Length: 50
Image (cartoon, rainbow, N blue to C red; front, side):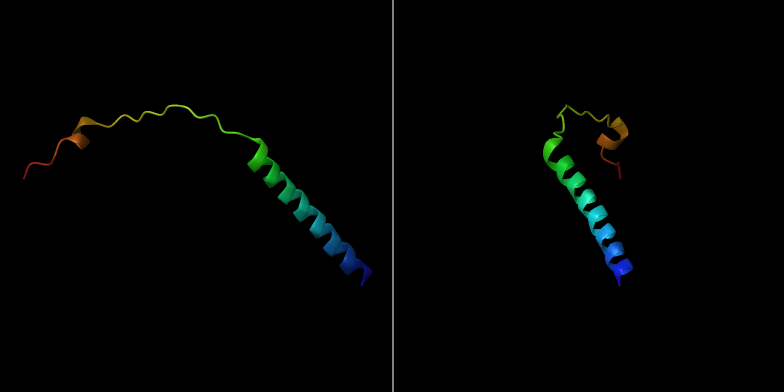
């Protein structure tokens, strides 16, 4: 039984570290907004002739 408790405690600590890392990334890292432009070929803008 002690080995099972040690295993579960280790898994809980690892899960806590992963959760803390995700929380820190989500709250303390701000994305930098920037302009985005996409080139559209003129063939896509022309309606198809039927």
